[in-house]
Length: 295
Image 1 (spheres, rainbow, N blue to C red):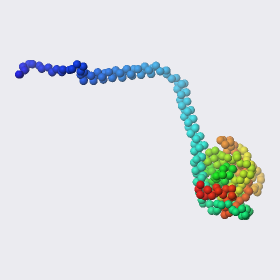
Image 2: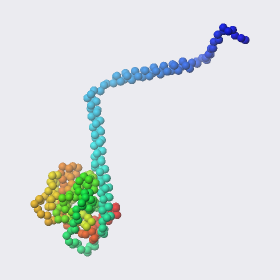
Image 3: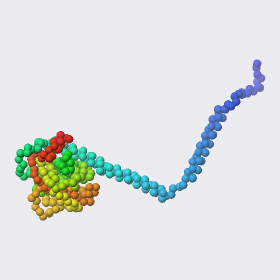
């Protein structure tokens, strides 16, 4: 059957009940989403407007509080570093220096026989090291612990005391010399080599080992002085006009233990010495042997 030329055919879409045109449905969803977003933005603006505004003083207080908390944390970390970590670093460096010196030491590590001679004449005194930070000996102080042994180093600058232990004042004599062999050491940080200096009692022995032998000093007394008291380093401590005839050991450190307002000075005098070739004093023989083994 042929349709007439003027017949306009309509194309009709038959939809089932409940069907939603896809194009119309998407437009409606987009419009709904836009409305929801606008409503949310208006609600957020109203909520911000209802919040009380902070005044300048309140903001300043908050900033200062945060700064104080930050400073407190930094200070705490500094204290931990100063009192804990510096000791770990210094102890490691000092033990390495002691082990190296002991392994290069020429001489037996067993004490002499009880019947061996004890008079070896005047002590041999080594020349002062030419370079700062040179390790020239080991100090043993049984009062500070049966395993206490610390390196003796040339110089009392920060480079020496912060790392290597007991530093010698270059104005003083060497171990065993007539006059004053004077050393300095930290008390609470960087190895705390003289932390227990206040525990010394008269009669305590302090042993010094060099390449030439062993020097035994006996502690006499201590003294608290101001940092400006340089006369404690004189050949005869605190006596500027006296001529030295004895052989002193002077140890200096900060006082009190957690401060530096004063200085604590420990004075000792040489009791005896023995050459390296005869072995160490019996009181430190075990520690001398342990140092040589690197223990």
